[in-house]
Image (cartoon, rainbow, N blue to C red; front, side, top):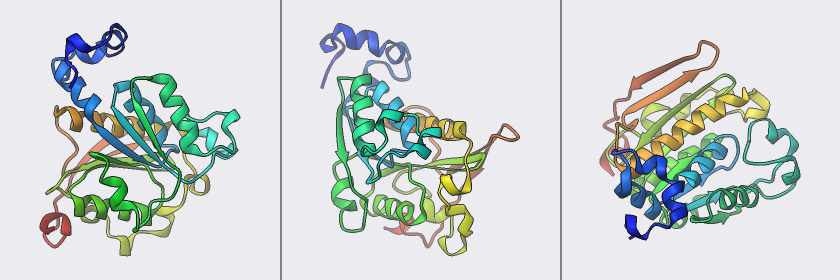
Length: 253
């Protein structure tokens, strides 16, 4: 573990904003440096999440996505550029993160998450960021985190709105909030079809990254058993208390 005397001059300057906060300080920055975070999806939400966690000094960032960059992505997936069209998103994103912070380790997983590899991959990380855009993958991430006791930060966007919540062992999970059997089909449409205001993914992704830093450092009140929603049309944030369902596996293992 690094101490303040072991930080290079560059690191002391780089993380001065955190080191000046008593809620983070040296101990919190050390926790960030030691943490391992998996980001599933390197698109609209994954872009701000990855950029901010890299800048924050998260020691190991895993990027999981099988997709390649397309022209239609660039309206909202700000980690990628026109020159990246056709490249694997994880490779494009990893290049940007290493350029932002050479002190971190970036691991790429250029394939889809599925029931065969989910546990093995997540076992290498402390925290999972759900930045996906489809129900099956969200459920897989949720169920794997519940089964393995992993912490998770969920984010979703559609058109002009978005929502965020966090999960740790013993708190409400995705299945406590959303009933997959009653989810409207249009709620699971990709952004390119359903439409999305590009700045909304920046707002929600930034909140996800904030939750991640708080969970890692151990400061503030995380969105556990609570869901934060954002509406860009009315410019309103709302927080809803979520009661864990007694019959859910997140409560009974």
